[in-house]
Amino acid sequence: MHTTNARIPKYVTIKNTLIKKIESGSYLPGDAIPSDNELMRTLGVSKSTITQALKNLELEGYIVRQQGKGSFVTDRSQSQLVLSLYLCPMEQGEEQFWTSLIDEFNSSNQGFSVKAFFLSNEKAPLRDSLFQSFASGNAPDLLSLDGPDVAYWAYMNSLLPFDDYLDQSFLNSFMEPILLQGSFNGKLYHLGYTESTLCILYNKELFKSLGIRIPANINEAWSWDEFLSICRLIKEKVSLPYPLLMDSGRGLSLKSGEWNSYSGLPFILQNNGSFFNDDLTGTAGYINSPQSVAAMKWLGDLFHKYKYTHIENISNSFPDDFAMSLSLPSAYFQSLKNSENVGIIPLPQGLQAATPHGSWGLCMSRQTKYPKQCCQFIQYVFTIQNQLKISKYTGIPVLKEIYEVMDNFNTISNNTNILFSQLHHSSFTRPQTPAYPFFSKQFAYSYYNIASGADVQAEMDHLAELVDDHLYRHNYYKMIQE
Image (cartoon, rainbow, N blue to C red; front, side):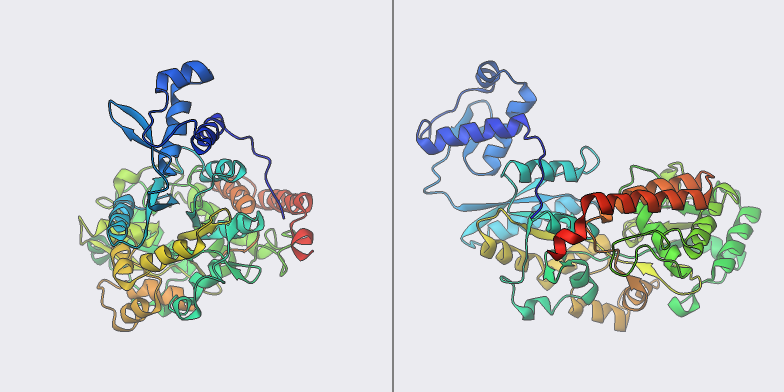
């Protein structure tokens, strides 16, 4: 078992001190605990530290805070069990969806309730927040994670597998890629509540005026050469900054999370390149192979040689003033609210087809004392009705029953069946290794540098050296196999 030595933050120490006083009877149910100012004075900490400590005490059901009156100890002997849930919304409107779903669940009288705590990956890295909560012994009962990070947290012994708590008939209702993404070392730790892929969004009116061929399905996808010729045509004929927007105009940022890897890695596989060796213990000779380097050179040329796409953020160009965009499907479904001029084209194909998949999903914390209740809530999240609701934000459900209806009968217009076809025929799961978060971060740097004009072979060699050193230093696989 691997553990972390992260420093316990002050607010957690204060929270635990107050919990001891409550549980020892120093503060009885109904008692007011000292005011914020008094706690600041006696404990010698800042207002923000006290606020965070009390917010967590309330989240865990020890106190109730009343505006203008103070904080009062609850009677936990009479109170209902409350599960804590850490969520990191990624799509527009997602926080509203979760708030509504949880309110509906709590009103259904299940014998317990769920309280959500929304985290922002932009304000503070999610991993830092999780490190602190797990290290202090105050982890939530449930948490959301991005799929490729599951192996890391499972390896850290932070997650409790679902295998003993969810029956096979329930798990059989999920699309296979969702179960594959959520597994590590033969156990299931994560259930994605959405699915995703990568596509090209296009300006229907502009493409019609230029006579550009529009692939109707994945078998008609553009080749790399045809894609370049279309970019060249747009650049010659249309007064736009770039023929291709990157990530709906957000560009290629080192702060964009998983985007750089999600959007770059497929092209390596399309060129018969690879990332790791078969047992995921090394990258030298794979991520820096001739095939991988050639793919990254092709990508880099789009930025600095041809000026077909961009690094900087010009997201105000989408969806009103653009030709094409390399995007997630969620950008398409959001754009439909304001415009019918956006369509979907499959990802261009190199020597072979390869498209990414993966999603955020729910996990159980190893520290939860209530796995059955956690799984009861999870089963509620994955009812067909709730899956249909969340698919309004993402467009891609994870249950076979919904997926098959949309895939076979194309119930959504404008070629969105392309998304389902890519997931079914050409999707790959990102490497399921505890080293993936490190690999992805370093790849993001390499991709950014290559897009800026750096030597491709040197960048990829350096990437392989960093990742292999990381694998060696952490000795991941020897510990796993033992």
